Amino acid sequence: MAAQQETVIRWIREERTVLGIELGSTRIKAVLIGEDHSPIAAGNHCWENRLADGVWTYTLEDIWGGLQEAYRNLACDVKERWGEDLRKVKAMGISAMMHGYMVFDREGKLLTPFRTWRNTMTGEASRRLTELFNYPVPQRWSIAHLYQAILNGEDHVGRIDYMTTLEGYVHWKLTGQRVLGIGDAAGMFPADSRTHDFDQAMAEAFDRLIEERRYPWKLRDILPRVLTAGEDGGVLTREGAGLLDPGGTLQPGIRMCPPEGDAGTGMAATNSVRPRTGNVSAGTSVFAMVVLEHPLKKVHPEIDLVTTPAGDPVAMVHCNNCTSDLNGWAGLFGEFAGALGAEADSDKVFGLLYKKAMEGDPDCGGLLAYNYVSGEHITGFEEGRPLFVRCPGNRFTLANFMRAHLCTAFGALKLGLDILFKEEDVKLDLLLGHGGLFKTRGAGQELMAAAAKVPVAVMETAGEGGAWGCGLLAAYMVWKKENETLDEYLERAVFAGKTGCTTRIPSKESIAGFERFMERYRAGLSVERAAVDSLR
Image (cartoon, rainbow, N blue to C red):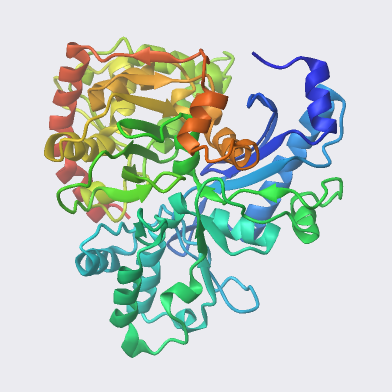
């Protein structure tokens, strides 16, 4: 239950709130949390990556301008709701979309434009490193980007002084600390869940691999220091406070938790940090995280091995494409509604289209779609071409059209999950859904359950999970009991007795229909390949 007005005002005045900020793919979100762990104010900024010279990127101006607007909107929300100026909080944390490549020289200058997780330009490096380590190294990992730059002979490599991810960069500028939470660190370079650090043997193997290049650094020299949930990530400096709030109201000295990736904050936001728990985040990209009971039997290029924010092993299925093409179609239908003179509010459009999707045939009436706005490593595509395909005899209705586009949003993800469940015999009791696709209740949840063949639950915070989850990690750092683990804290202080969670159990009919859709999905990949090869 939300706290009363007087209580919230006292929390704000007495600096008994925590702040979580997450830089997502399409939105930067800031959430202020009270002592009861409920959101009490929020602010956001919408942004979009750009394809510049063949590279998916955001500029530094995009990053800081967006952060400042999201924080400014949060501070305005605090003022409007509670009549208080936000000057200081108990703790705060920074999160962002994982992976990618940001490298800096000794003066802190960015050496090459930020290469985001969305790029699929590192195939050769990914293959070679996976073989070297006998450990899956996806294309979007920082080490794959670094080694590909080496293989390409890019001249900036010899001048690297620091390599990090987006949230590691923001945290560094806010605190002066070159640190990273283990969940995202494990998406830069393989991590060792026993030592809660980068895998030292693999780091030494990489140094030997590139020894003849004679760079002035060893790998560990340029990587951030790894921290786990609950450890101190430093404090907000005066310069950092000015970067976030140029107006000068925000005060320095705020304790900051280790910066974490959106996978780790998603796990915290859904209470999915114990074995046999899992969560799926569906937005611009889609990924599922399953906390493992035992190591996997073999290396699967489709499966990442990362960790929870506490350092426990996690299998991750990550797909580059989820809602971008779906959003494009919704925008088109909204434009059509507007041309007819009807109200075209986006929430109303999405709600109507998702509702229609649930009226469609379980197998989408034979319709097929691919949402590949960019490449998709699970199916072997370095580039993407969004496609909609049908045969003359298919049931071409709005309901089946929308159901096909929702099903394909989970298509590549299902291929990865099938490896875990069928080949590795991984057990999962429940998937917790969060992210924009689950904000409109029902449709995405039901089809995700059909794809995974397990119940899928969605919490009230489904659309805002990441920033809230980041705030929970900051709260854990300052409010945990002595020797209390992250999963114990979440269970006791955050989720105990909480309601507002809806669960969908997949029906046999919906599972069978999704399987028939996937048969066409696999068969039609040759059509997608022809589109990539032919259309420029």
